[in-house]
Amino acid sequence: MSTNPRVPDVSLHGLEEKSDILVFSNQQYWEFHPTEEPLALSRVERTPDGIGLVLRVATAFPFGSLEITGEGVAQVTVNGDTFTVRFPDANTLEPALHKLTLTAISTTGERTAPHHIGFHYASAARDALNNRVTRNRVIVKDTDLQVAFSRVADWVIETPTDDDRAYAQNRWGALTANLAGAYAKARVITRAVIDDFEPQRGTPSDKMNRLHPFRQHERILAGIDHGWCANMAEILCH
Image 1 (cartoon, rainbow, N blue to C red):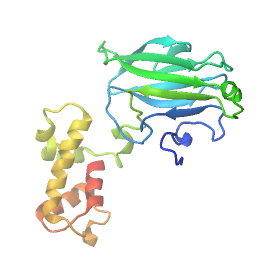
Image 2: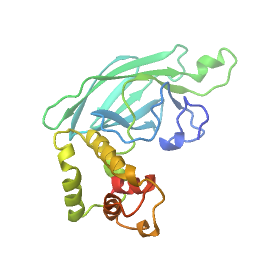
Image 3: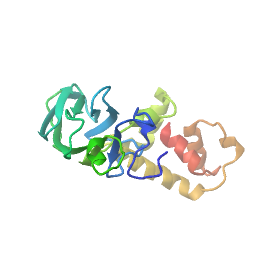
């Protein structure tokens, strides 16, 4: 892992450790976290040739199309949920800038708010004029897009059964009935589970080991066992 907080761990993005093109971010977008952002970046890779990046988006709704407008020196192409940004002059001696505005459109025509992303290409040739040996660099200078590497479904530990769904609906359905989006619902359910555990916080007995998460919850509610954060996590991830 990189020790520089401005440089992402390239192993997360399909880049070689000795890549000729570095991908920099000026903000902490490279943390692994689930998100329900209407529009987010899900993947950033270098182009197989030339100077450029291939970026893929993710949406919290059925994806229809991607609308992109831009200003600058790069060549931009769009293919479904993926867009490619290429800087044609690899040896430019001037900073090469490009700004994009992105809007995602759902299959039923709804549009996200416009989002922006700015790129800066700095060539090794420019640094060589000052007797400095560097690599070609594509820098993500500014963006309001988050990077989404996973969705809630990706980190659910087990597939719930019909009985599991019925239990969850009976316990928390009323709390989430008027909420939109998985994130808002997860916050409310998490708060409820924490409150359930509060009177019974402590070391769980051996009977909690490998017990179905909702059976653990029932023992907590009945006041016959104790639990710690690992037990809460099992319930919330089931």
